[in-house]
Image (cartoon, rainbow, N blue to C red; front, top):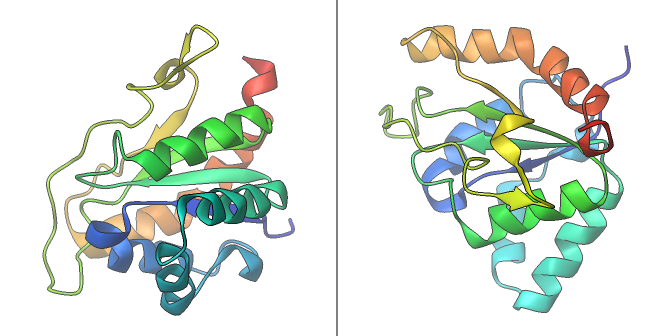
Length: 165
């Protein structure tokens, strides 16, 4: 199976390290990953430029993967990315990453499901979007669990994209 091109959505300030772990697992097409410098450049753009960048990135991807941390739900750009992926009929899935250790070797509290907060065309997205939350508590086991399941989760998201809801 070919590696999919996906767009990773996450709260940069809190979860950049954790997101990097997932992005660099080697389970998605290399075009899906951006360096930390790329993310820093995007953060410096104005709102219109950020929207255009997100729009362009999502056009070339088959799935939006929302990496869910403590502060992911209800963030402006994450909500924008989810709504845009919905409009573009892209696969959408979530992966809880709070149990992965950050650069300070700390785990975090579980965040709210960001799809609980979004209703599009009368549909509460949490009813349709699958979110993966590892049953393990050890960061190493959580990492391996995500690595073992991410490709199937992405395929599920693509097979169950908004047009099938």
